[in-house]
Image 1: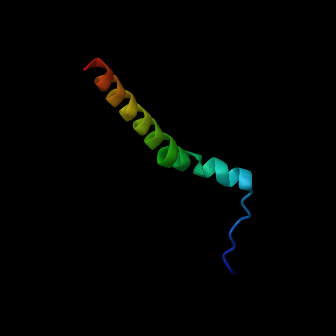
Image 2: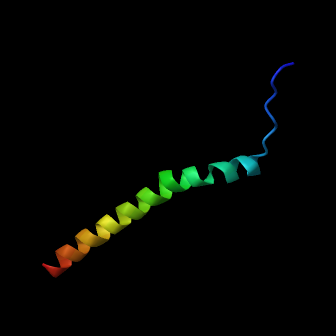
Length: 46
């Protein structure tokens, strides 16, 4: 008997991959924005 892969809807695939997208895109974006905010604040205060 052959092993068959169950059909995965696009909605289900996106729900499964959502945490990966968050870690790969959103967290680095938060880091970049906070870095620029800190450097701008240091430049403005000095």
